[in-house]
Length: 227
Image (cartoon, rainbow, N blue to C red):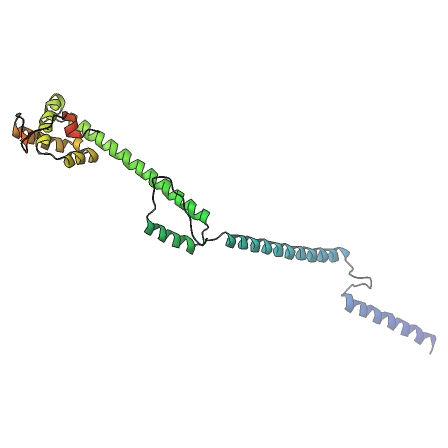
């Protein structure tokens, strides 16, 4: 082989090596690796970040799984036990319906008790509001009666005595109790009616069942002893 052929063959070998390097590493490649070390570093960092993210996702899933297990352990008990303030009773039928709903939603005894407490608080507040409204209504009726043109004002005292005679003669203890508890004993139309009845029988003392009428005070007869 001549020297020129030897040199040419060596050149072809080097060219083939360069072509192989280009195919292996890409255009502009090098036998020492990626020609851009920074890009290679980014790929590595991205890979590590992905692995780290996967690990965090796994940890989050484990945490959620643990929370779910904890929630299941604190779910509905075999039987609910509720506590209510003294003087308050839960209707058995209502309690049965409530327990079914609580069990359907897998509520723990503590969660169900919180709802019971909320309902008791709302019921107590509602009862207090109704009582306050009732008291205000009785007071309004009383003030209206005192100012009534027909039997109120300066005529109120004598009108009450007349009404007392009517109640004492014809009224029963249950009627007086009703007037007192309902507050109707303060209602101007009720007083007006009883005053007219009293005027119709006059001022003479009547006997009921052969016995003189009781001598209670006029206010006690009309409004009740505890008014």
